Image (cartoon, rainbow, N blue to C red):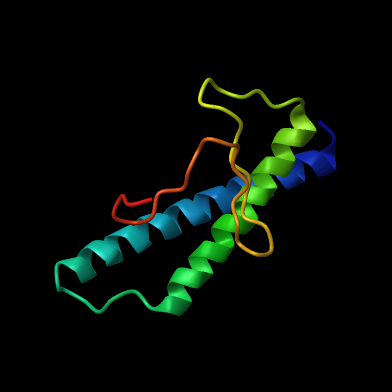
Length: 103
């Protein structure tokens, strides 16, 4: 790897760590809200985390493409990050399950 590649890798790893902490805090806040110990998480906070996750997902997909051909598991191709209209691209025969387990 060249020097700029190392810098990009370090930035990606730092963002992964930061988002991981953000997810952990978010989950704890959700659990506290569900238990009635605090207010619900604001829509703005939820949207902020969602944006970070989408951005990070795209960065990870780009990294995987740069590293070489991607391999698919027995479960099928990787589900792509939502596009501009927030629609997921999934292969035929697979369905998205809504919260609560109902298709």
